[in-house]
Structures are given as C-alpha cells and as structure tokens.
Image (cartoon, rainbow, N blue to C red):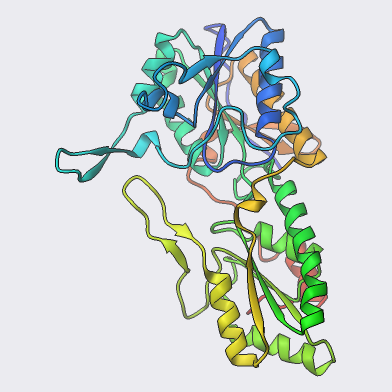
Length: 382
C-alpha cells in the first residue's frame, strides 16, 4: 500500500494541542488519547480535550465552563483498556452542517467550522488531532484547509468499527467489533441447532460489509449478506433448503445493516433529519419474516447493534490505537498538517486527508476473503 506524503512545514512550533473524538464510539479511543497525551507531554506540549466532538466549543449551553479542558498525565492513567472515550463523543452536531432554529421552530443548517478555528486560536492552541470516521475526517479536512492560514494544524486518526475508511489497512475498533460479533454468532449455533431454526444476525457497518463478512466467515455462518452484493432472498432460501436436505436442520444468516435486496431498497429506522444522516436498521427482522414464509422453518432475528461498540478493546486495537496516537504527535512534530495517520504494514504512515475525505472503502468483491467464502460454500445471496 503506497501513500503520497504531504510536504512538511516545520514553521510555527507546537506549544498546545487539542484532541477531539467524534462520531460513534469505538473500542480503543481512550488508548489513542493516552498515547497522544503522553507523547505530547514528553515534547513539552500542553494537551486539551474537546467535549463531545466539537460540542464543547459549539454548545456552550451544554458545557458552559469546561467545554475545552486541560488534560494531565494523571487523567489518562489506567484508561488504555477501557472502552468509550473520556472526552465523550456525538454523531450529531456536524460543524459543517450545524443545526440552528428559526423563531418559528423550523431548522436550518449553517457552517460553523470558522467558529472552531477562532475558538482554538483564541486559546493559543496550535494543533488539533481529530479522531473519527469518515464524517469526522471530512470535517478535519475542512478545518485544515481553513485553519492553516490562521496557524492551526490538523491531523486525522482513523477510527470506526465499520472499517470503511480508505487509505488505511484497518481502523481501530474493527477487530474488537468482529471478535465480539464472532463470539455471539458462535453461541447462536447451538441454540439454532437445538430448535432447528434459522437465526438471522444483523450487525453494524453502515454501507460496508466488513463486520458482517469477517464475523460471518470466522463463525462459519451459512449465508452472509453485505451491501456490496445485492441479494436475492430466494438464493438464501435455496441454501437453507439444501442444508435441510443434507440433514442440517438449522442455518445462520449474517446480514449487514446496509444490505439490500436486488429488487428492493435499504431498510431504514429513520430518514435523515436536518444536519444528520439516515439511520439504518431492520433488515434482519425483515429477512427473518421472509425466510420463514419461503422455507416454512421457524426464524428468529438477533440485532447486535451497539453491543459491537462497547467493551474493552482487543490487544490488536489497543496497540493500533497507541501507534496511531503517537504517530499523530510525531507528524505534528515533523511539521505536517492535513494528513491522516494510516496503518500500512509494517509501519504507520501518512496520507493526505484530501485522499480520505468523502471516500468509503468497500469490501472488494475480487478479494480473497470473498473468494474463500465462495470456495467453502457460503451463500452471498447472488
């Protein structure tokens, strides 16, 4: 994997840096924060945390006193193994589409990225490390473009359990989510077999099927449905019929929340609101009803949902997060801005945020993981 490395500009030495964690939480966030703080303090820099993404700046009604606060070594002691984030996070309040209200209560969007830059510079903060997924890193790219002229450098750190960020081999949080999903699906095999049922397991991932594919493969699911391959429900039913005929009277179907039928649309819990995005969910329940009607077998749906976001990170995610955090500080020390630290074995390298913002990494259909699944008889619904 080769990345283009931006030219460094060592002018304007760093004295103070701020850290933001935005979007959905992921195991490993605290490990990044700890690594950033320790690496920065070793260089004599001061560290500050921004509450709930950028709400600590943009929502003084929520944080009238400590929306941006100093972080000491003591505050990051013993947090490496903890899930969540000590800064808090939110997937609302996108500063590029910040929701405001008119006098009549109607809502509209405004761009408040300049407010963030001005607030940080007023605090004499020289650099910002944004830890997040595609949405957060798109915001980071905008802050870099507008903030550099005002003396604010920006570094991105890739975080998402969905693993759908481009230009990095993996994101921290993904390994933990897959490990937990695999354990859950393993447990469902025995109960499904005992009752001769179809178990449909819905997992997160938004518009990418990485969690469903890896957890489904690892737990020997019989069908895996991902957004990258529109499915035919009758192909899935045919797989179940074939298993029944062979004396295997149960089946496990893993489905990504963003999967959709060839002749249908994605199932949504909620349409996009002003300043937000649509909420996926419900495809597992829909599939269970459809498969029960077609096959005549009892079917149950299990939604793992936010369970995949919680808990202690795996050792892989802890180490990845620590490497990302320390690399982000090194990038600042070298004079970089507008880059994301990325995992490219054997090292963490730098890639332009411009190459990441607004792009999604989908499961490659010609990759060997999909090919392996087809070789061992997994149904992908096509």
